[in-house]
Length: 285
Image (cartoon, rainbow, N blue to C red; front, side, top):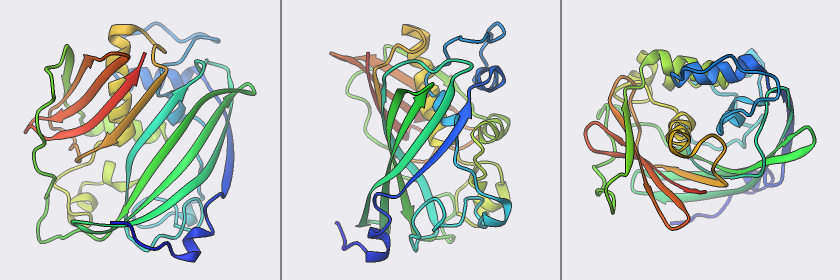
């Protein structure tokens, strides 16, 4: 159920920030080895895999501006929502051209909407940010990225997760099962300059956030799904990719990535070892 929007938060709609970067061979190699690829050294001008934009031109805060959860204080890069937890809820990405090693990147991020709601677990606030990624002055991709803010965890119920979801409408045509371990989570946090402690600080995530283990990053799961599609159709084959987080995935637990063909692309998903649907996704080829 939607709720009225606080005028203080409404004033943030339309605010923008810009960051720049250069795509380096080290950046692309770092993503390849984190995904356990066996590839030759990356050359200048080579196309980077889809999902590389999450490593590029990340907005950075000074150490003094970091909160107890590892995120920048609210009111700096994101609106001052009065809820303590935030998670990546999902994204819709339109790919226009490949990003290549050596490209100069500019990311322009604009807050598009702020939507308070009340869910079964209490108050929620959804913040949608639009990102435009230009490579050498040309639009490379656009992304609509949604973050959800939530209330404090019920620490009397540590490790509580969403219930098991229904099975997919049709069986997967190709899949991969892996176990994202703490090393993979740490490496991805480093590549994306993401200091959120739920991904690497076991005492914090279990005792403060109330989860049963380290949380696998939403965009890491999305990158793994993009990688699954690339294994069948090649790099940079997708025109559009959207994903939605359904339940948390935990480090050191099995995660199965699945895909099946649809009329214009792929239906993809990630399922935990205990049968929970973690992420749903769609791709247009």
